[in-house]
Image (cartoon, rainbow, N blue to C red):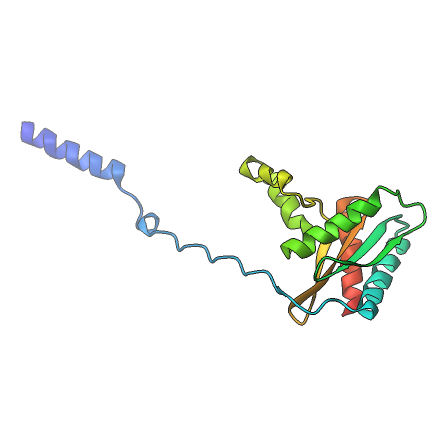
Length: 170
């Protein structure tokens, strides 16, 4: 009788601890993210003018009073434009968004998204870079030649203007 009870117990435990075969297979490691583009030759004044014209057209089309800053691949200011009625505080914010995106070789939205997740990502608030969407690197032939930063409306609208400027370069 004891032996049957032990066998019944072992069979019960086997059913309780059984795991589907698919769950036993370890998950494949996630592929590492692609590295950001390398820096290239700094944006020329002619290229910066095209980016500025495209960004300004997008802002004016939507009647958005913004500041647009364009930096070269070394983080130096190439062009800055403050549209009529743009708040003067946006001058430094636009430059900072552009500086952050070229220094970190990624759109500032990447940082904003990490902050939104909370937890350990909140330490990004202390890195000294803008964590607001609206700064985007300018990539030509696979290399970062500069960046554009926009400030004055919502962060998403700022990014829309910056992207329109970059698209005008292509």
